Image (cartoon, rainbow, N blue to C red; front, side, top):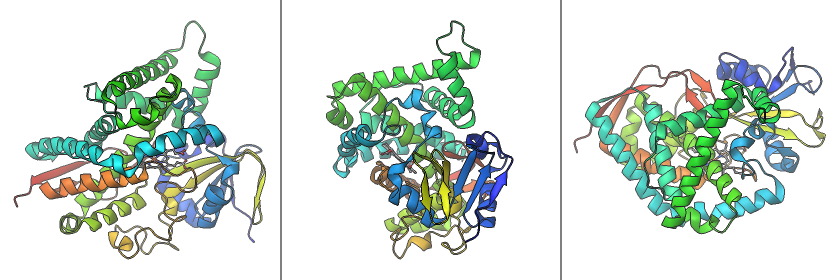
Length: 421
Ligand code: HEM
């Protein structure tokens, strides 16, 4: 068997995906060139194994999953996520998973979906009256944050939504782009009398989100929300961590999926008509949009113990990145992989694609919010296509930004028209 290619000379390996200027096309090019497995190699203990081969993906996420933890990229978010479901493993994880699962099960969806439709209709009215939407991603982020906070936590207050989004993003970016700096902030600097300005800002952002989480909790308890029904008897820390983990996982991901679906429907208006005729087409359109633009474009892992698979040995504590973006564009699996074609899901949906198509991850740690997210996205696209039609202003193939959650680099704009039926 051929040796795995090593691309040498990289330092600061955890930052590599964020350092390459045009990250995703570049990762895709390398994945094609090296057949889905290569190593960024900066010397001993400075390796990042980049994987987009389905058999390896299965090995990491399923067969040897208990040896692979989420590792440093997610751990860098510990100040935000505390001991929540994202960060913990084994029995602490299981207790959090079991507490959250019933709050996100299907019979809790109906009230949530009513709120989702209501918020989307409000936004759509604004879009229709202005006819041009200059920044779709920003509007959708705000709308989906409101839906999550109202729908899951029962919160009905008004807050500075944009302020929450900005501060949340600042914390995520600090984890993604400047992990080393965060370690520095958190481990070494915090506690000193005078903090450098950016550290003060980080602390301030964190405190702002914590205050918001506390307000949500205080409100949730009086409204007996779905969330409170299941989490209400847990400790204050458990509840705080849970709110911040759900905020982290729940709105920006769904916002990215919806924005890119709207983007693709704007670039291919014939599919808007297909969605109006048949609800199942909506699902295929969403699946295809998440194939080309997976909101979680990479999954990060680190193995606790040395592990061997085929001829490859991963020493303990090796960093692994599953390159979901390239996996979803792999020519062996997808016919014309760069073409937007929802029909590819029309025969069997996503059946048989467990390790080739993973917008929601796979294995034990896959997304607990998947059923809710899919129902919500379907309802929102149905609401939009029923009332308006739109065309994309600008490029069908947008440049992408690799924050923790996938976004376009410059945002995008639409021209919108009310449908008369
Ligand atoms: C389109 C929308 C969404 C996408 C694409 C998405 C994607 C993902 C992915 C890929 C993972 C696994 C990450 C990994 O393996 O490292 C994950 C985990 C998770 N997601 Fe989602 N997600 C979405 C919506 C939601 C929603 C709406 C919620 C909750 C309301 C949610 C809650 C979670 C939680 C709590 C986890 C951690 C599960 C665990 O560690 O056991 N997600 N999500």
